[in-house]
Amino acid sequence: MNLQDMDLNLLVVFNELCKHGRVSAVAQNLGISQPGVSNALGRLRKLLGDELFLRTSRGMVPTPYAEALAQPIAEALAALHGTLNARASFDPARSERAFVIGVNDVGETYFLPRLMRALDDAAPGVTIRTVRTTSIDVKDEMERGRIDLAMGFLPGLKHGFFQRRLFRQPYVCIFREDHPLARTGVSARQFRAAEHVAIVSEGTGHGVVDQVIEQAGIRRRLRLTVPHFMAVGPVLQATDMIAVVPRRFADCACKPFGLATAPCPVKIPESVINVFWHARNHREPANQWLRQVVAEQFAD
Image 1: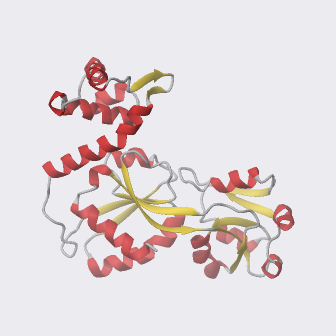
Image 2 (image 1 turned 60 degrees about the horizontal axis):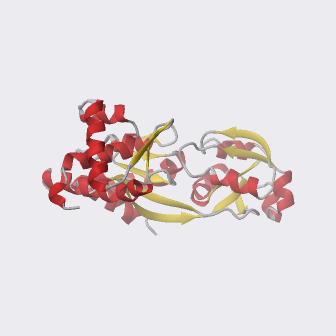
Image 3 (image 1 turned 90 degrees about the horizontal axis):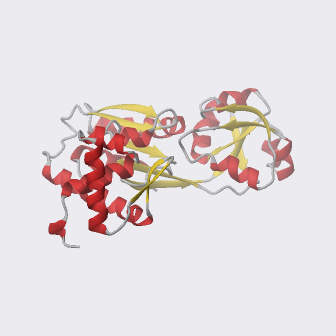
């Protein structure tokens, strides 16, 4: 097809359908009627020669062709938006900008001390507010512009998002430093016999731990299950329980709580920790600056 046949508004409707999957939500977001959305989709189907979205009980599901178009169109619209709304360059030394970062409790423990120290020197007027990625729909909040960056193991952030890898980290077993396992290490038999603290960190990729252990045919003795990592240190310090946690969380927790680590007898894939930003912020100077600060402080 020729570009002169394409109406930019049709691509905006396409992008919104990719994000929300419901005609009613797209109509509300764009301030048009539902028949208007359906009409735009019909025109786009005719232009591209594909159904693009199929109606199911779960809403409008993209076809393979629509999935292939989704990210390039989102990026193109974001680039056009940024160009048409270009702003003056960002001066961190003078700015009083308030940034919002999505991160879980492990990320707060690991990232914030060093990040805030870096901002003390480079941007004394800049403020940071964090929101827990485990308690909100981080994808929706970033699409709405309510979160500037997200950091962590967040495999759900794909279409419409950019990412930069910061580091990879293994999972380790952690327990109090005078635990018998501190002398012997953790065998598969000892791993099965131990009482465990399990962490169910919703909205992140850390659920892979439970999946891999289950696939290995190991049934753990789960004595305690918690929705976040911050309870792990005090609990392990006071008991004989063990837990499987990311390496850098263990590094932060061992000294304050008198804990030790050992390799996990189950081979769990490393978690990949990224910084994420929405396509709408890709060329925004303040967001670019903060991303660079994060990369300088934490990227391997």
